[in-house]
Length: 241
Image (cartoon, rainbow, N blue to C red):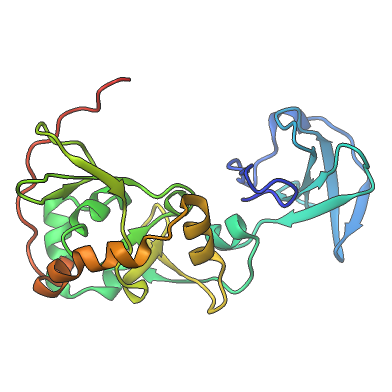
């Protein structure tokens, strides 16, 4: 989840488990935002603020408080939410829908199972031919890098053996973007979600419209998963800098 005091900081460890430095820590019961919680010790991993994790009466981690370094009384509260996207953006209104296959025809599901498109990355790869996009919360924070062959115009998440053009994963049509978790379950944003702004802000995505125009012809010719994607050339392993 994005820090409120410093949006460049992202708390990625947001499981309900007790953090290691809070084991055996004694804490008083606090009332914060109308909720009774226990506050752990200061988390030494963070230097942008004094960060304390919050726990409910079952000792499940439910959020954190981040205090400014200059004034301990100046703090912000961040809460975990049912949707990991809601947690990331500190945003209410995200709903959890069905798995991604409920949004596609039956034959797409059958082919995906037969060919092993069972992870977000594999599914994302096979969506590159058309306008459908599947994004995890990690892709909201850092949109994937796409490689495209300048000759055959194939796209891949992995570099080709031939020279390739690089660019961020394009978003052609917002109505065909699906936010999914690692179990391929769809999370639906509220109408006023900041998720689109975050994706543009993080990457200076002023070229969103230009990117859409570049793939519009391809999108018209194919309905992404509804048609079989062309064979992807064999990818070479990433080269170290």
